[in-house]
Length: 143
Image 1 (cartoon, rainbow, N blue to C red):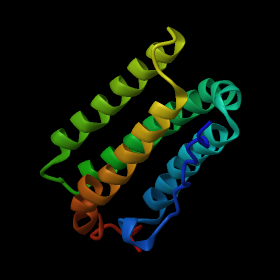
Image 2: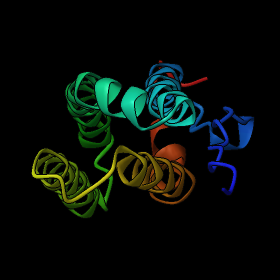
Image 3: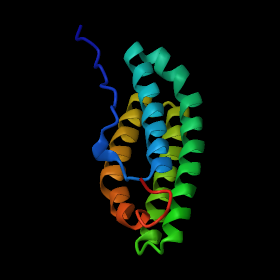
């Protein structure tokens, strides 16, 4: 029997920083929640399943607060890609809710969502979010 896959936990890197303390802390919180799912997945399917619903609901609520925060500051600085950014946020929430539904129907594993969260989060922070960093640098709250 093959060894089970071990999921590597995410580590915050300064490269992920958007140079805005509140948003960076929220990103760290989302990484922490993704790691909770990975830790449960590393303990096995039962642990992953039992942690999944609790963690995913917490993550969706937290993500919505985070998205609101980002969008509020982007609006303050007239960020030109705000509508595209908001669209990405809505698509993310829709995909997560679809994954939860698939899990509840037995069509998806918690591991699938944990991998999706990791990939989306890192790509979104490193790509999409970094684009607004110079705009938010104009605000007094910026690092």
